[in-house]
View 1 (tube, rainbow, N blue to C red):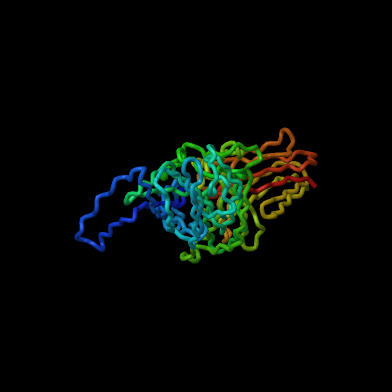
View 2: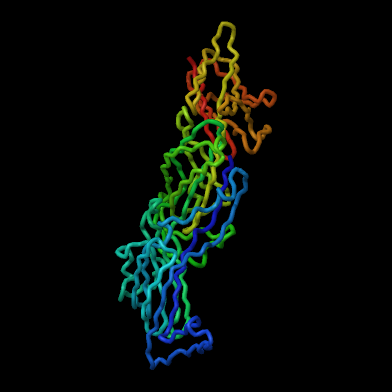
Length: 464
């Protein structure tokens, strides 16, 4: 299977406004009449009011693929249509004049890309601060009517947890120092940005006969602390590029990163048997997060708990592409994952002395127990087995293993000091000697890489 990811910002919402005087020219109604000349700004001694029309509009920001592969078609990798909770379901706008909130406006469209409200404002210089999908009761008092806006309002903290996969995505944005002049066709715009990132997985089952159930997904490291209410517009990433600036986060402790466990519990029909099967998709939302320094690998780590028909559940793992260093608010990242037809297995062969008993190996899914009756040489064979019983021997990349299917050098723990394993390239086996008189269980961990997913198998060497 290929593990790839696509990254591009979700469609941003744009808050636009049109200020007009009472004199509005309608070209459709009067096609032969020349357009009137735009009037000059009225003198300060002639106070007038202007009507501002506010419009919330969504505009996609582009796409970018950071890895290649042929297991998924372009259509299968395409972004899903925006869900209702990712659109604008309610909004609140504060108009600030001379450091105070002069007026506010609210709206409650039904999962809309855009909405409009008219508001009369005297001529002057304003800033507009907008929120979407946040209950008005949760809007900080600093942005309510008649409040004095603090100088550090852009550093305001947002404390809410990441929303559920169907909850409305909070948005925010602002436009500073625009002038209402009382003239025709004055247009203003505020980019309203989702405060959270969307993480989506799409799965394809390439097994010939096995049914596969995806139980859950673990994703780490994910930031769990507070975030800023507003995005730093100077550091926002450019679409179709690898952003250099990591997201700005408030000061936080070392315990503000954790693992997200996302429950799926869905069966994955084989796409080999039925080529028309649509890949399974599932998603969740996270806060802006930084991989470096917050995980042992300095990468984002994926764990998928799955269950093949008739077998025990197991967790397979993968690291995200090294180019995926950060998650910004409003990012959309897709991880397409293929479940292979092959599962990894271990076999143990020994060479008992005359009168001795062969090693007894018990297979318990992801764990293998080899019980020795005496000391002596033994071999370990690592291979992949498909649903029809066919096998493929795998070996380390240093010994000719492919980049798609290989096994790492085994990790040995709880073993006598001189215990070693040596790979025999002629037999494609690891060779070792079970120590005489050993009473301690020797633990050996093998990590199989099968088309970018990592399957862990543990072998325990025991003595009767």
